[in-house]
Image 1 (cartoon, rainbow, N blue to C red):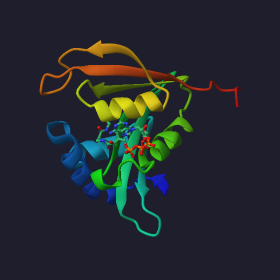
Image 2 (image 1 turned 30 degrees about the vertical axis):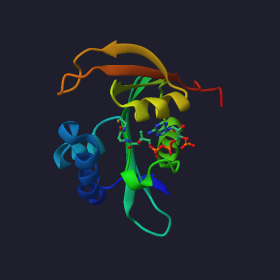
Image 3 (image 1 turned 45 degrees about the horizontal axis):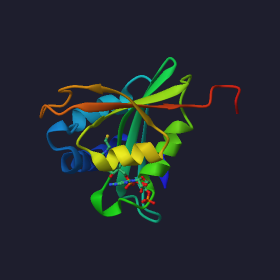
Image 4 (image 1 turned 90 degrees about the vertical axis):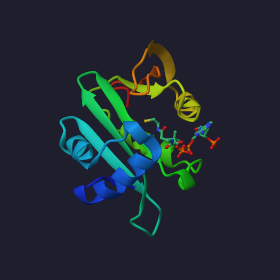
Length: 149
Ligand SMILES: CC(C)(COP(=O)(O)OP(=O)(O)OC[C@H]1O[C@@H](n2cnc3c(N)ncnc32)[C@H](O)[C@@H]1OP(=O)(O)O)[C@@H](O)C(=O)NCCC(=O)NCCS
């Protein structure tokens, strides 16, 4: 159900980006930069028996921090555990990082609830972070350090 993304997935992911993120959406060039960028892990979720992508997630590891760049699930596939499976994959591949950080719109109550349930705590706020002027909540989750299993 979860696999590494390929370039062939990017047009479909771009459609989901526009539907889910509007003005903040990544276009195909931005998605390509994520696919090829250093430290990135870009995974997609597809329903069993099909190759239709219903969700995707991207992380970026740099030293002892891994940033969660994106996690998103097609509206009609939400609340089925897809984002949890995507996030679990990224958490299992943190590189050298000992913590994961993310930014989420203060207006995005569903995503904030998802991250809280996944063990993230609010640590800060960035005012006027998004194009529409809304603030970002910064959240953090500790990871098992190497040697802890
Ligand atoms: C946030 C998002 C990724 C969650 O994806 P999902 O596949 O529906 O999440 P899951 O099914 O794994 O949810 C796991 C748990 O998180 C919590 N949760 C998820 N979405 C929630 C919501 N909208 N409201 C409240 N709690 C929510 C619930 O506790 C849920 O468990 P439950 O369904 O048994 O109650 C999805 O709503 C989404 O793509 N939103 C639009 C894009 C976005 O905002 N991405 C995050 C910012 S990058």
